[in-house]
Image 1 (cartoon, rainbow, N blue to C red):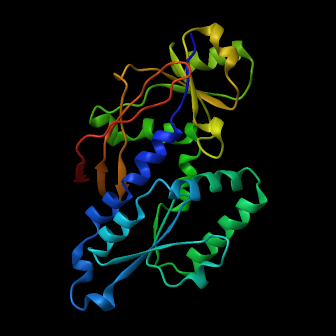
Image 2 (image 1 turned 45 degrees about the vertical axis):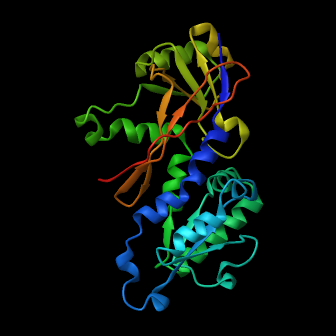
Amino acid sequence: MINLISHKTAEILTYFNNIKLIICKFLDKSDIMGDEINNIKTIGIWMSEKKSQKLNWKELISACASHGYNVVKLDLDRPLEDQGHIDIFLHKLTDIIAAADQGDSKASTIIGRVEQFLSNHPNVTVIDQLNNVRVLLNRHCYYSILQEEPSFRKQGIFTPNFAEFTTNNIELNIEIMRQRGVKFPVVCKPTLAHGSKSAHEMIIIFNEKGLNVCKPPCVVQSFVNHNAVLHKVFLVGDRWVIPCNLFVIFGEGKKMQTKGYCNKIGTT
């Protein structure tokens, strides 16, 4: 049995419904002590129009204003220098970065403009740094980083074994799995983590016969029963927040559903 799901909808809702929490819980009011008017800072935000519609802008603007921050929406089709001064650049550019890295000329132009702007204005705080985002575009890359992180191992946090497939040769892929200690059932996902609808699809495979549905380049990872609960963690500097628990419903034709509980906040 093979199940196909998409977590794009859940990801969008979780990320943008908590932008206010991430910013406003962690911005120190000491930044605006003294002459508050002269020290008000501006957060420039960019996201796609589709994702923008998921965000309660009125609530976000009000919450940030209470901490001494203006919020402006940026237009990447215009020079950023013409859109006023910003102190913080908060973005959701993952899909555009992925498209640029895949050779899309329009996306490359947009990312080039952003990178030039940030180079010309090194004091602008970027959430997240573009090079850090690029790491997260490749599942094999960030799986490796997580698995090799010594502090995780000391705390008993582990990354399930995984392997990357670059060919349709099933016998070779079985051998790669054996060498990497990957055992069935496995979760198969595209190596590219953003940039297309298919990047967010995953397949659960229960035996060797099911490997013929894998479309390289992809990664397979030993499936660990986690009671269908996922914890999404957001970081700003050394501060973190876990905004909600995500409950995943696996089933053919069914989408991921989410349900939020209390927020957890702390520092590393």
